[in-house]
Length: 182
View 1 (cartoon, rainbow, N blue to C red):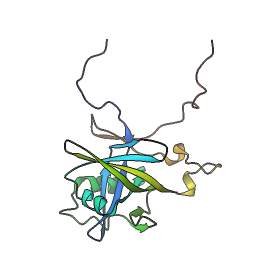
View 2: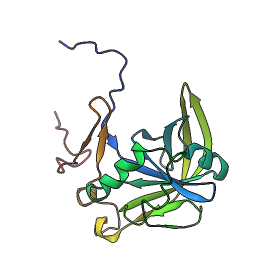
View 3: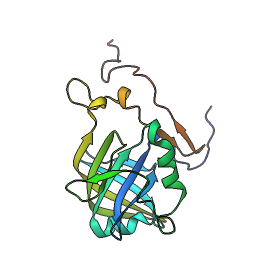
């Protein structure tokens, strides 16, 4: 029998990402575990209203979602521990910019460059509804068909209930091929 554990979010783990934007002319980064897919060309990035990055995102309407792998995890974790309002995080990562002007982290193996379509507010949070403008991926994480191979990428996952980072695992099956017929 299942136990009712309240209204806790139970959709964890989620991919861990560093969101990059320009605030007051400098790159700023924030670690984000609240991300969602809302269509084939749009994602949602949910940030506490108190985050310094929100100001830059609202001004430029641009951000990057930089997927975190294990190699960059210590720096990524740091960006979630200090606020850009009191600590200059612009030099934590080497970066370049592309069409949106938002910082693309050189260390991140996969980066989604996004433009903000809308902002959905809930108590204490601003959720940025973003259209994906471009996806930048290292060749080393692509398969022979040019698609992201998540077994090679091995993105770090975040789970809130225990506040832990998780290592991704092995492929356990192919979608729509595991069912059995009658």
